Every structure is written in C-alpha cells, then in structure tokens.
Length: 225
Image 1: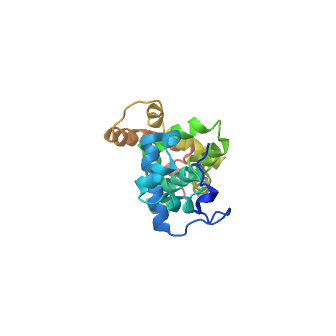
Image 2 (image 1 turned 90 degrees about the horizontal axis):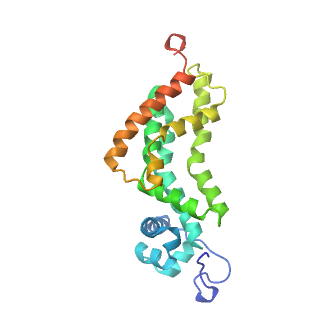
Image 3 (image 1 turned 60 degrees about the horizontal axis):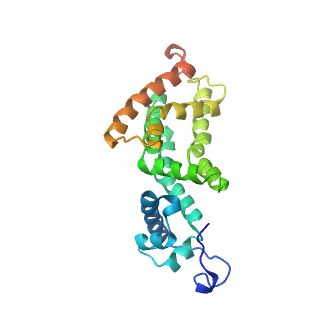
C-alpha cells in the first residue's frame, strides 16, 4: 500500500497537495530516495527512511512527493535526464557510424548499471500490482529513446546513408543489439564488474554497429556524402 501523509498532520495544509518548488531540495530528496531504493528495494523502502537519508523532515518530503510510487517514478525520470538525454545529441558525434557507436555505448552502459538493473527488477516485481508504474517506467525509460533515435535514422535515410524502410523498427533493433550479453545476466543475479561492462560493451556495440550497417547501410560507393 502507498505511504501517504496523514491529513491531520498539517503537512499539506488541507486535502490539496501543493508540490514544493525548490529544484535543489527536490534533487536532494531524489538522491536520498535513490540510495534507499538501491539498498532496500521498493517494497522495503519507507518514506521515513527516505526522509532520514535525504536529510529532510517527513513533512518536507510530503510537500514534494505524495507517496513512494511518485518518488520512485521521479527517480527514474531523473536518471533518464542525467544519463540518457545527452546521448540524443546525434549531430555532435560526427559520422553515422560514430554517432551509432557513441549512442550505443552510452545506452548499453546505462542499462547495465547497478541502478538501472535495480529499477528493472523493482518494476517487474510490482508491475502486476501496479501496472501503471510498469507502463510509466517503460515509456519514460527505454521506450523514450525510440522516437528521437528513429527521427535521426529517418534523416540518414533521406540523406541516402541508410535504407531502413521502418526507422522505428530499426531503432528498436539497434537498441536490442546493444544490450546483448550485458544487462540480462545481471538482471538474474550474475556478478559483473564495472571493468567487465566497459570492456564487453565496446565489443558488443562494435558488433551491433557492424550488423546494423550491414543490414541498412548504403555501400560507400553509393553514399552521396
């Protein structure tokens, strides 16, 4: 059951929830929540413990977040903004192959990170009881990359560098290729070091780019650029 502030505590000043507006305080709370979710999981985390780790009062916590579900969703959004959004600057990467490599490495390493694995496990565990949370995680997490990546691929098709007839499908296929052998073993409990992820992702993404270009790339002699 969601933890919600009692109406007789005065934390909200009534039934309506007025969300806090200080971005630094909000980030402070989110960072504390991430620590608690990492160590205790979603079910084991409490709003009281999150407030303690974040260094705020429980009343302040409820000013910013109504319940644990909302706070967990914000943790997911914050990680996406911090680690995924920068990957979508495709034009800064140079050639098509360089852009795919940069994007693939960032995506594969993010999805194989301990925090991402924790989030996936948590959402899988609560998806049956809270399907909206599962849908939000998918839409705000992995799926949020697809439309903008597909837009980039469509531009490459228009420029004569790719022949992908369905850019959205091609985008999803590339993302799946970049996760090969990286995140799934950890999802099921395999212990993988940071160094192993870094090394393996280099090989996996290089292979993904090669396979992708073999399927959709235009031969160099035919490339108008």
